[in-house]
Structure formats: C-alpha cells, structure tokens
Image 1 (cartoon, helix red, strand yellow):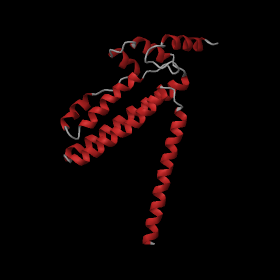
Image 2 (image 1 turned 90 degrees about the vertical axis):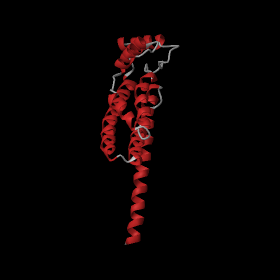
Image 3 (image 1 turned 90 degrees about the horizontal axis):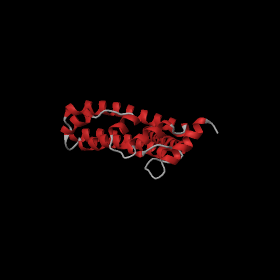
Image 4 (image 1 turned 180 degrees about the vertical axis):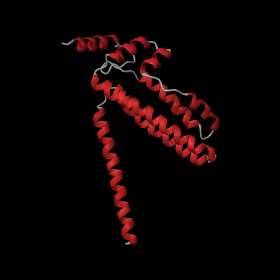
Length: 179
C-alpha cells in the first residue's frame, strides 16, 4: 500500500464520528458558504438593499472557509481534504470552480437588471441564478457524500439532450404550421 493510500486510510479512521465523510474525506459544511449567498440572492427581489450584502460576499477556498469557521473539526476537515482521494477531490474542486464562475456570471446578470427597477425581472434573474447555483451545489453535495457523480452528470446531460430534442420538435411543429 502506497504512502498516499496509507494517509487516506488513516484520515478515514480519524474522521469517524464527525460530519466529514469517511469515504471522500470531504465535509458538506463547506457548502454553507455558498448557501449563505443563495439565501441572500433569494431575498433581493423583495429587499433590493440586500444586494449590498451580496456584493460583500467573497468566495473562499475550502481551507479558508474552515479556518474562518467555528466548525468543531475544522483543522481535521482541512487535513482530510488535502488527503481526499483524487476520484472525489478532482470532481469536487472542478464543481466548486463551476460554482464560483456561475456566481461571477450570475452577479453580472443581476447587476444588469437592477437599474431598470423591474421587480419581476429582478426576481426572474435572481431566482434563475440561485436555481443554477443550487444544481451545482447539489452536485458538490453528492460528491462529498460519495454519490456516483459521473452517473449524476450523465443523467443531467440526458435531461438537457431531451430538452433540446423537445425544443427542436416544437420548432418543427411550428414550421409545419407556417409551412
């Protein structure tokens, strides 16, 4: 057994009885950082001044989140993360990167509609952004909990393909009407 595998096995023993997943060595507590932003975004349509707090929110790495938190096992969470098996750590890190990119894109979209002061447009955009973030956070949660993330991604792709096919079929029907 290699040095890395030994460390992984050791950390799996150390995290027993904590909220750190014993298989992945990751903790869902990190997602609280993103949940905070989603909660703020969902308040913006009814309380536009909450956008000030949204603007103050800053992304944090896994390590930064735990160093700044009151999480009981925060040091262990950071050490376990650093020894998380690559089959979980790599897709997790990639998903977190996607979350952060979606936040940047989403906040730009929200900022673009705010000056119009149209509550329904603001609601549609902010809820759309928070919904897209939730999908990514659900994926991250699945990875943290050891769910087969490749199967989830494949099923999401099938849903998107079905939606695209339905749109094409609907467009064909429309074309037939105006033939």
